[in-house]
Length: 224
Image 1 (cartoon, rainbow, N blue to C red):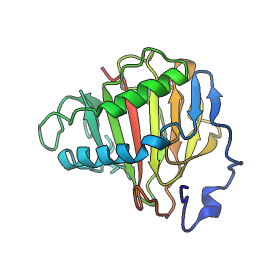
Image 2 (cartoon, one colour; image 1 turned 30 degrees about the horizontal axis):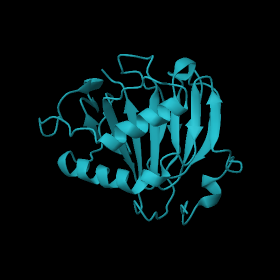
Image 3 (cartoon, rainbow, N blue to C red; image 1 turned 120 degrees about the horizontal axis):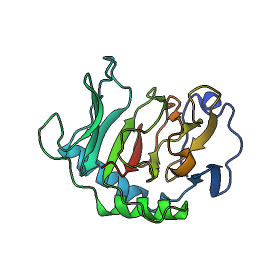
């Protein structure tokens, strides 16, 4: 069973109701699949570690010069990067000049199955952004909008420590819905919800048997 946190649990669960059904619609074209990747979590984490050995995690810098609190790496045909020049996908790792590691077959297979479970039968991911959260790291409300084809959904996989997912709407304004994501949970959004704002609260302290003090998030996309 996932250990959510060792301290600060009251803050983590503030505004969060009981764990919902295995499949929970979040809006038009969006769905939370609880535990969908649980059986594969250990193998997915092992793949993350192999990817990071070739393309280490780093805290990218926004165009405004602020370092992101979540560390990131990529795998697949292209990787998402951020720096003073902006946000974009590129073929090579800017730190090494080498192509990003290939996407592991289990990543792509899981993403296709999750997308199909949410009603998207032709998802073909070619990029995976991997975020590593340590206690205190968060991700503010944002849109995934650097991809070329908005007809393809986003598939987001949680591994390790639990975190509060913020699910907003078509505009940044307004109070987002707060959902607790545990290891193995998968969120899929596309269609009318493809450009909805989303993020996560700061990760609380805790220890998970697969990832220690970290949480990994796999965000699979059809980027090009």
